[in-house]
Structures are given as structure tokens and as C-alpha cells.
Length: 154
Image 1: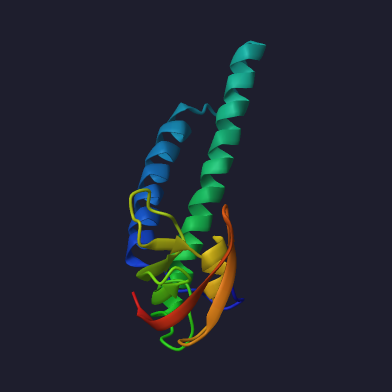
Image 2 (image 1 turned 135 degrees about the horizontal axis):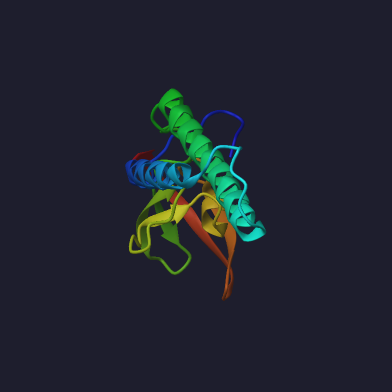
């Protein structure tokens, strides 16, 4: 990834927005169970209160991270059509001759066989490359390669 804001795919945006909604709902539930500082219960009650307070802090941190990522994606605009980046659609010819069109994503969708995350071996090899470039990357079966046929925005 670069230091510039990265675009985000529609799938990843949807996933982050859904996660954000769930986190906000969970945060509201946790916050509603907290007592103000004057409550003095037994040690178990105090430990439980402390745990919920810690949970609230973790939820707030994740909410902030997602909110910032979505804001940065808005600033970044669409992915470049010159070099591969997050959000790019890339057509590659693998070393076995198979041609595949892939989306470079930020978040892997469990059943999406066309999405490659930017931090996967193939995703890392493709980032910053252009049409015509050949890349190598590691697979469980050993080194492999791909040639970028074309790329465009997702």
C-alpha cells in the first residue's frame, strides 16, 4: 500500500459499512449496561463493569478505524487505470496459460473466487504494476507467475 489514500471496492465498502452498523449497535448495547462511577458493588460486579468498559474502548477503536478508512476511500476516488491498486480489476495470464480477471480487494469475500486481497502473495506482486508486466509470487506449491494483460477500475 502507498501512503496515499487507497480506493476501495464496492464489495469491501459494503462489508465495512455492514460491520460499522453492527459495531455501533453492539456499542449502544454495551454502553447502556455501564453504570456511572458512583456504583460500588462487589469485586465480581466491578470486574464485570471494567470488562464492559474495556469492550467499549475496543469497539470505539474499531469504529474509528472503519470510519477513517471509508473517509479516506472517498478522498481517493476511483482506482488508477495505469497501475494496479486496491480496487483495480486485473486480467492476468497465469503460468499454466489460464486467463483470469481478478479484483484487487482489501477484504476477502468468502465465496468470491475473483477477488484477491492486496496483502496476498499475488496481490502484493500485482500492486503498482502495469499492463504487460510479469510478476512472480509464492504459492503453497512453490513459485508461480502471471502476466498482466489489462487492468481497469472495478
